[in-house]
Image (tube, rainbow, N blue to C red; front, top):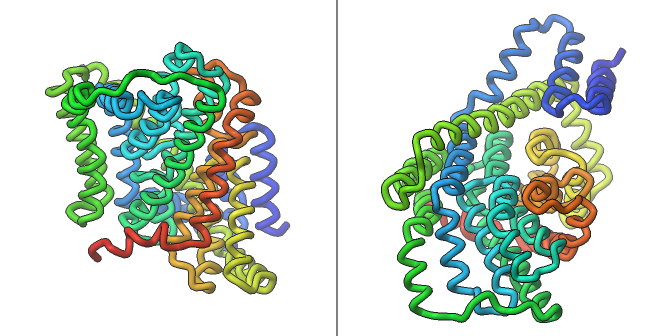
Length: 427
């Protein structure tokens, strides 16, 4: 039997049986590798090890750890207080606070799921208390959470950079402007929604209140500034910046805000190790999967097929966006990166598309998938805190998904939004 056919059959059957995605990739790849003549079985372990033993992937653990420290060490709550003081006086100010804090949290955690779960748990009760419709209130952290993989530091950007050999520092900076654009568009919609539905202000504006909250939040606000500033200026690499974020977060949480205990640190580290292990298993399994495809020239065949059908950059970008949006509804973001990026990368290069721009397009499309059923991760991450069902969440988050769609196509066809900051970086 054809090894590629075996690969696909085992992969699809195991998924249907409910086997976790990483294990489906691993079992399918192992079955196909065994059919390659003269290939030692040790190659399976070797290829997997090489996929996971990359220095840049250390950033995944540290960014997850930094996000957890931010959530449990009092850093997030200070950011919320400051955001309320600044925009709480606007119509629908609390909804704007949710979106702004999601953007700030994303600038530390690198994860959409973590952003949605954390901000949803902290702010959903307050939204309901201020008479926001429950469905809409639950949709806000879902919408803001999608930006967790766009605004740096982004774990998905790290995976893309590791997979394609693209500069991770430049990839991270490519998400800054698009992420802020999408966040601003969402805030405008939230303001208009509040005016239409006569949602009141959260509080009166006071410079004294802003100053007081800024004094409390300054250490929290400096955290993303130090991380992004260090990456942008080249003072440290993304991996080093992740480690710096952990150290800084611990110092602030323990000695300034005094809300972090030894027992809590222990649990945070354990949870971060578990989360990182799941991601690394997926990366290693996908590396073996990609190796099998390469042995049988699948990337070359796919490239030839696509270039024979698609003759312009505009058409290719349209095809890529549609493909990624569909896949984003059905698969995990990391899995899509690991499988799709090696296939579309050579085609994009043939059309002269900047690899950093390509990475931003791919990741932004996957952000849309985080909020779309049936498998939108942010939708499910919001359920425990909001107690709203997936249908209600999907219905209320739909206007924000339209905003994300519009931003995706804007970023796709106007490269300067994603390449401006990376092109200014040293090196």
